[in-house]
Length: 190
Image 1 (tube, helix red, strand yellow):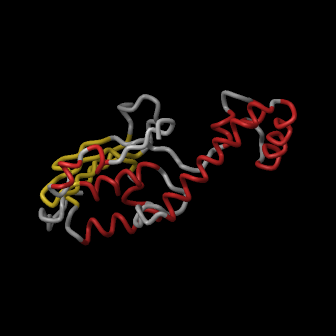
Image 2: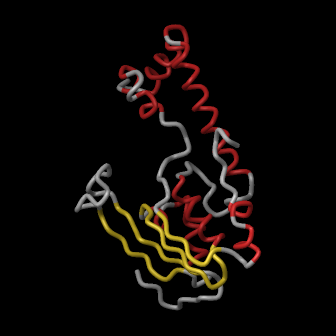
Image 3: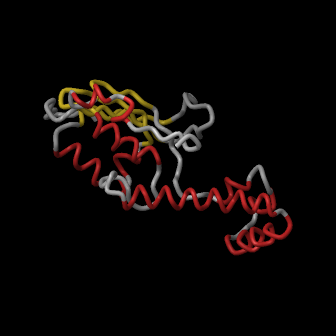
């Protein structure tokens, strides 16, 4: 627990959840794929692997690392195992039935987490990739918040002004506002 710094909402804030959940959540959750991306992992550790033109060549180079740089190979194996275990938890634990599917991105499971933690009269506002409303792996989640009339606003925009400096200018984001079960919205603002 110390190493991975697990956060348990109900243990951290029992008085909040004894009263039904959080009143208000604002967030900009991390946007990372759970599946280990070999190119990204090796980009600062082994340029040849990162720039390999094909997956087959990259796989061969990674196998060679086991003999030439066992420390790096072990680091890669640990990261790969961690990502596989995380994916297994997110897809099989039952904690994320709406977003724990396919090639999982952390923003989606955070969105579902916020959706579940807000109390019946609470509100949640998050900055997310627009994929929360358009991707196949998040379609169940988005359909549910629309069907339950819990979505109040979805404001989409591109990063043209480089609000997020490290993100490509054409990347599409949204501001998503959803409510607890008791605050219905018949006409969401899209």
